[in-house]
Amino acid sequence: MPKRPSKHLRPPRPLSSSFASAVDKADGRWMTQTMPGQAATKQYRCPGCDQLIAIGTPHVVVWPHVPTVGSSRAVDERRHWHNSCWNRRR
Image 1 (cartoon, rainbow, N blue to C red):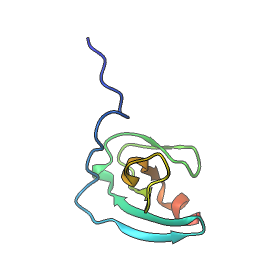
Image 2: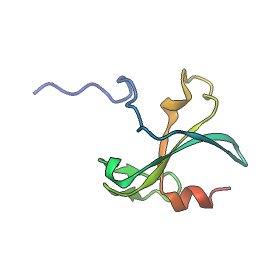
Image 3: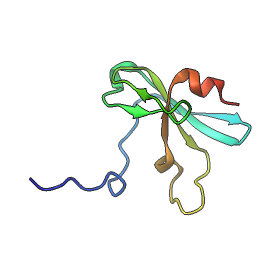
C-alpha cells in the first residue's frame, strides 16, 4: 500500500462553517474558531496541557493573526486547544 503524503505537504482542510474571531492575548493577536464535538473527528494534542483532546470533544482552534516568519499563511500554524486551557492562557 503506498504511503500517504505528509500532512505538511497537503493543503489545510477547512475548519467548519462557524466564523473565526480575533482575540488579544499577552503575546499578540490570535484568531480563534470553536470546534463543536460532532465536528471533532480525530484526536489532537492540546499545547496548553500537552494532553489529548478526545474525538467528539468540543474545543477551540487557534492560529496567529499574522503568520510567523517563514510561514506563508497563518492558518497553517493552527493548533487545537481545550476550551479551558485556552481561556486560562493570558
